[in-house]
Image (cartoon, rainbow, N blue to C red; front, top):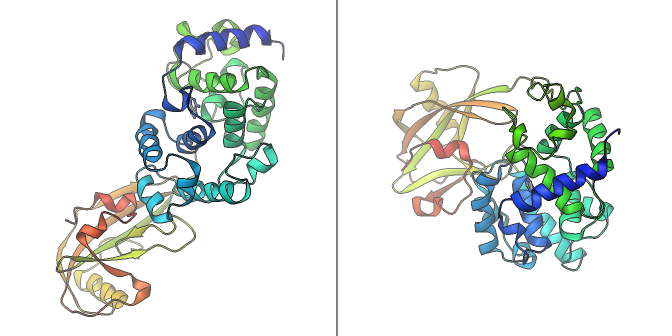
Length: 351
Ligand code: ADE
């Protein structure tokens, strides 16, 4: 690789030792469970955002056995706000698999670790290296940025081939004597020094090794092609109230926001519809008469692949009829706090 690898490892590890952030999963008492939990939470999430969730989870579920006994609703509700809810569902499935099939211990081979739901090459390498000192290099967004700059890699980091190439280079750079610290050090460098914009090269322990720094190319790398366009979705969200109860439904068991709770929605291809049409469609959906109280204001909620625009419509139900089971159920307002209602609908002032 044309780099003094051992000098680079020594610089990086020396820097990490004196500059690392104090984080609960780095405490000497932290075991693989704390490390596993933190790595699942920190995927696609920054430390500052993930930390309160980590604290909440370890308080409620101090070990793998207690997590394995949780219900999915409870885990989803605690996860609300972090997004990418399949991570929460998989975390629970993985905890159950570890408890039932691996005797409550994190599996010790890469192949077995990858058999856990939601555990891909990144999390498997993170837990095996940090908790068990096994020599696997991690590649996340931070590592892609640090190595693209260090080694002047101009390929598109959105491409799988580029990620594979960077994984190989990370494996070559890894210090096999300190794989966990090395991995955390690269990620920490990416999070605190090798920033996406205006990296702090004057404070960087790797600046003397960095090919893009020597060519003043650090601000042009990494190269990431523009994302594909998001699907545009428009819907009316029906807040249907009967005394102190609201009509809620659970989303299907597969797909976007699987099994999360929400107010019923009417998908439309364009806004606005006439009030009479909205009411008729909502009545068709739940099977009893409704009155519209107010409409709006509109909200936008952006997911990784979808841009959702929605307009809340507030209805009062005049009938004592129960909704059809497929359309959802009446939920008391206090009980609503205990359901995992997805984030888009938290913007609605329904109370
Ligand atoms: N991001 C995800 N896991 C991390 C870790 N262990 N250290 C620093 N940043 C991280």
